[in-house]
Amino acid sequence: MKAKDLKSFFEALAQCFEDEKERLGDLDAVLGDGDHGSSMAKGFAKAYEAIKDKDDEDFGNLFHHAGKALLTGIGGASGPLFAMVLLELGKASLGQTELSSAALKAGLAGAAAAVQRLGKAQAGDKTMLDVLLPVSEAISPNMTINEALELTAKVAHDSAIQTSAMTAKKGRAQYVQGAGLGHPDPGATSLALFFQVFNQSCKR
Ligand code: ADP
Ligand code: MG
Image 1: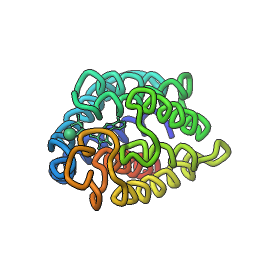
Image 2: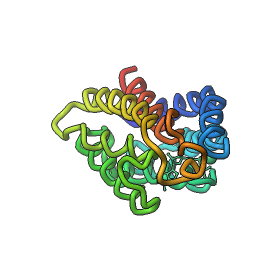
Image 3: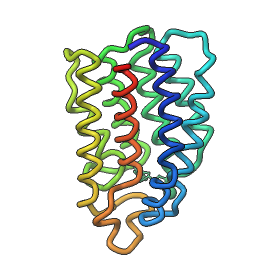
Image 4: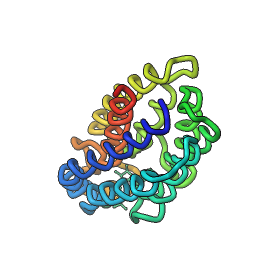
């Protein structure tokens, strides 16, 4: 996977969150305040804008610029938390012009730690962490990047679905009737989409 593939990934991601805006907003309307779909669409549009014309082959720099755009571009809980994912992927891949699965694993582990530090959630609290933790643990540094991304997409998809059976201990969902039981967590669902598009873009 090269820098141009990363730009196509962010272009596809911006399109994906635009297409899924309503569904994610509806999910967040049940579990929170309904802004999650529009936040993701706005944030990832800005992330793509931030890198699309950058003449830079370094994955670390590109992820960093995209993460910064997300951090400043959207509010709510998920803006800074999703930004952490990109910023940590950037730290782990700094200096790489071709993304390795070792950097991917290190970046996702760093992201899980940063999200935990910021949001104070644990595994099973029904947040995006319930996708991030299993995904970072599933991949191994000696896989090819294609194998690693394929696995992240699958694990993220299954893990997001499993959040339906959880009751929320963090975020707005903990205050709604039933703490969201029976509905998937919006942030976990968005993160699964992120990995699905990542995997698809890498194969093109
Ligand atoms: P807000 O809750 O501020 O309206 P969003 O609706 O955009 O923000 O995002 C909600 C998502 O953020 C949740 O579905 C959950 O995945 C994630 N989230 C909320 N609080 C936390 C937390 N403390 N730790 C990890 N993730 C969290
Ligand atoms: Mg919300």
